[in-house]
Image (cartoon, rainbow, N blue to C red; front, side, top):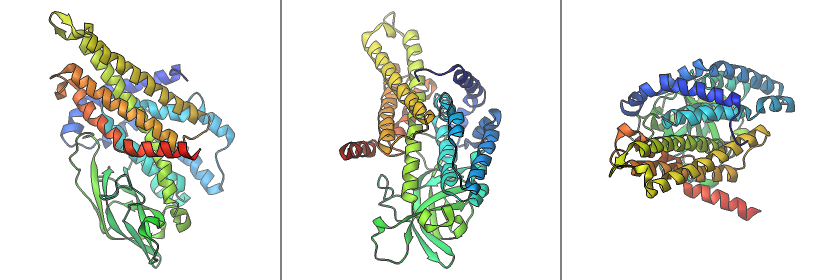
Length: 410
């Protein structure tokens, strides 16, 4: 794949019209006035029939879960098409990130991570109870793994504990930097099993729980103030003797819930591939704005685009755009072939794309000088937003270790 198909371009153009009409007029409200982005997400789903498509996919997944069967080769081929589900998922991400990466972050965590985890590892009852409402954006989900003192050591450094008490579990601990945390209706939360053994905390099984907003002992903080992604509410979670039944344990079996480490790692792959698409959207927009500015801005009687140093900046931006676009296309082709990226491949994709987006956005600010430093010219927001690509879903440094360890194992 080296370019979008005609059908994909039609979807892209329709998405652009929606964004101009329904997102751009509300950017100040979600970026600066503290208005959550969820009504915009729901309107997006309704406008493009994404909620109905989610219901249809959910029905098929639920039938397979109940029957204990897997997706057939014919179903995979039908879903793949010329990029299939991956392409149609990534196009809205790219286009939204031209203007508001925070909306994508909130949507991706709710639908991709929270709902995705439940749909992959939950029972049929759990899928019906929590999965469908998240997939259709009727409810908002959070995916809670990071803690104040763990960060990049998310699994090993985790200290949130779940203790058995009869047929229930009692959970204590805290989570931080949780996207949608302040407003989430459903929280997919990871915790270590406290079974009273002498096993070091680092080595204990990781369980995955599904929690409801308003559960006694669960506190969801107000949104944190951040450098960027103001349109994506981020908060902390505090758990004090939160008591839940076994029906809240993902899969309702500890041996399956104990595979929480693998569940988390699988989500890292999905998350990192999504960051590459977000990076592409930021790069495309910064390049477009920079080219137009270079044509319009006149110094010493000459458009600044005539100056070689400005041309160098634009050329490097275009190189970054081509490289990241090719990485995104490769991901789409891999998905269409029915294959998954390895953790190392997803890490390489994310590492390069995140760095490229941050560099391009900062160069756009530099190219516009004082204007670029003001909110009116928009690259200021995109530069702040792009920086987090190098931090969330695993820092640059963590991506390096995943890539290198995979190479050294070969």
